[in-house]
Image (cartoon, rainbow, N blue to C red; front, side):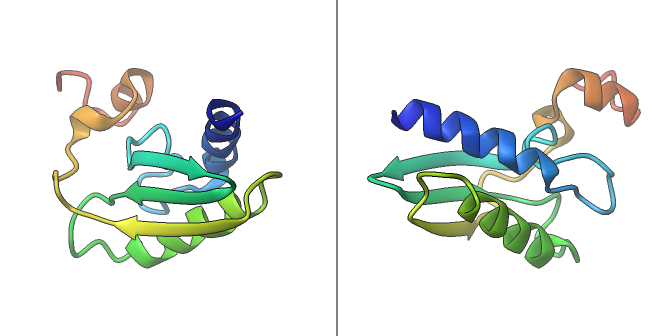
Length: 104
């Protein structure tokens, strides 16, 4: 049940698009951890940099989209920059489309 809910949350988060990179937070590798305990969801995520102007927008979008998933009772989203995000976090096909094809 928990794995199914995490999968549905990840799918729902594909609608949260980074306005600068034009791709969703899942494919960009911004989600570090999603945990669920009896419907209470905790998400640890990041953005491209500590000073990212879209960080609050992304955090709010993740919280709102997660709250819409059936079975979610509450949502807590934590922004972290440890470890720092790098282009290697991006899904390979998206990384290539953004011009980061040579990043491992």
